[in-house]
Amino acid sequence: MNILFWILPAIALLLIMAPLFPIYKGITTGKQVKRRMIFNLCAFFGVCALCLILPVGDMVALAAPAGETVAQGVGNPGFAAGMAYLAAALVTGLSCIGAGIAVAAAAPAAIGAFSEDPKAFGKALIFVALGEGVALYGLLISILILNKV
Image (tube, rainbow, N blue to C red):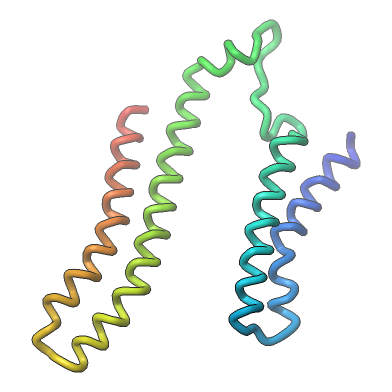
């Protein structure tokens, strides 16, 4: 068990770091980046599957106290609070990623439109602000979730 305690996290770390090795080796092109992204996603889901299949030291598995079944442990307030914190973190993180993608697409187009026609500044700014609104909505939802904990 002691060896597994060190080997499985090392394997997980190597799976997560695996896409960085080809990037370090050479120059990237569009096709290579696409393959590396697919490889990175496969490595991520592989680590998730390992965490579900092989819980090491009760880091992933729900440990119920002695004399209590797992079904009784799921109903405890600590579990609900933990899931609420996880939900708030996911809402904030994923909405910020979405807002970043939206702004990355809208801002260069807005700058290009503004450089050609200065009257288009207001219209272009609206599209950039709409992308940022996604992050604000995610932050608002996470605040509402945390107020219920």
